[in-house]
Image (tube, rainbow, N blue to C red; front, side, top):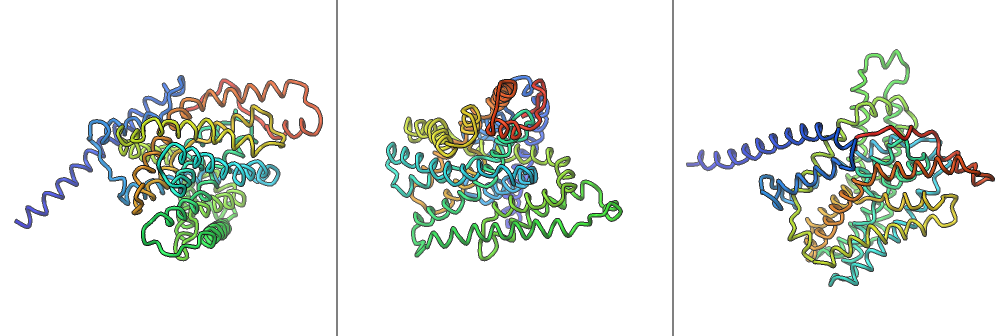
Length: 441
């Protein structure tokens, strides 16, 4: 009897694993075959993965089921963030970091809080959520996504200044939004006790920055520099060495006294990439396959968590909040933050639009859902709908957007540009690939 009792759960687990393995294999095959179509159309593979998860999950046929409150889903999303943040951090150029740091700083310090405030005001006006809950929604939807924005920041047709600015912004704003999300969640959690938010934020950011710098410097120093000493280390092992640095930085930062692991990962990647370009090159050659698998897994799981009833539980208010987030809050905040800079209207418009919401928002909203917050499910559904719409609209506009900003950049370069502002603009563009170059999204 005991054996039979144990056998049934094991059989159920085995069945679920077999179904998941079958679906994963099928999606990898279909994704590979569809990549050619994606290169010739507006189709986004990321959007296809989310839709596939939605159809297969509880919102569709119910073949795949994941518990949104389970540790597995949150851990998978965190792993995706670590991998993507580290890859993007390695791509940061030392020269651009030293000479063009002011644009991403303006967007982090000015545009991000303003975005959160606008979203909070709209949420408060259209729902019955309290001010604290509304600002939690704003904090969840203020960061941009390193996974979705990577298709733009890695496109050589986009001017270097734009790519550098979007890359630094998406890499750092996840870590900057997390303290606000945790602080607001703690304020809403019953029995949280005394919580000094400013002490938490300062310690969180300082520990993350310090750990990231220390791990990055140590990792760059530890591996041999000389060619003879490196001959015995295969290229794929160097890539694994770099990836190990990412998880070490995250683990050390989040251990007691609980620093910001996401900032630690991104800072460690920037430090390692600048000090050891050879390691960066090895990782860049190995990273694409890993990133695609991580993207496939996390977006399929995310899609399976969605249901129409949950997404549109607030009716038109939810739709209005999503529209305000993507069409009002981000553009207003970016244009305000970049006022008085040497960027033209086209550049500001491009950076204002390409602030997609994705894995970071999803991960943080899962953390909120796991807390004992009365409106946690409602807040999660608002964030999920915004991410879902962002994946679709940003996924189908990234290629067209890259081509548009390329044409504007080339046209401005051919036109008469004089003075200090013109010289700075030409230097910021850098070399770009030919317009005919296409890529898979």
